[in-house]
Image (cartoon, rainbow, N blue to C red):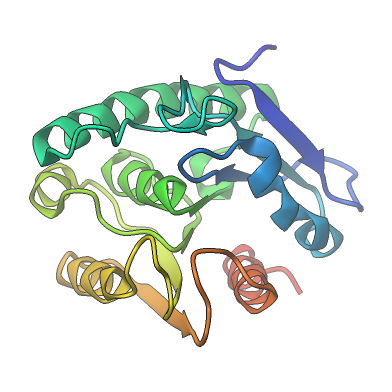
Length: 219
């Protein structure tokens, strides 16, 4: 089966069958290979897991060698929200393909994302009619609070991690996202990493791995 998005696929080191799927969404201008670096450590501890790292459906407008989930060249909230919703449609199609190929339920799927990918993971998780296992977001934010609140259908347990020195997506966004999720009855954990810019440090990767293991009830 061919996925609708070009995808880097990695299996856990110890795999007898596929029980779980971790979908990792890259940031603006990145690709599946970039975000797949997280799996180098995770695949040692998450047994019977498939890791899927799709490329965004659009070439990045400022970095043609990379991809984007939605265009940022026009600084207009309505435009960005509409473009993000288009990306949701494509990602939901991709997720349905993953579920069919590996015969797994949404409850066995973890959504992870960095920056723009984090924004998409949150949107997908909260607007989907089926509840995902959990969400891990690095250095992201809520794209449009009013729109997301209106469309919310679900609220899987969520972990948000952000660097206090993030120069691209200011750290204040994690506090706003936390407030939004709490007000909308979503269980959320947050961690601000000291002296960290717009990237995923080892500490953040380790915290995310622990959170995923806990939610999958893996020892």
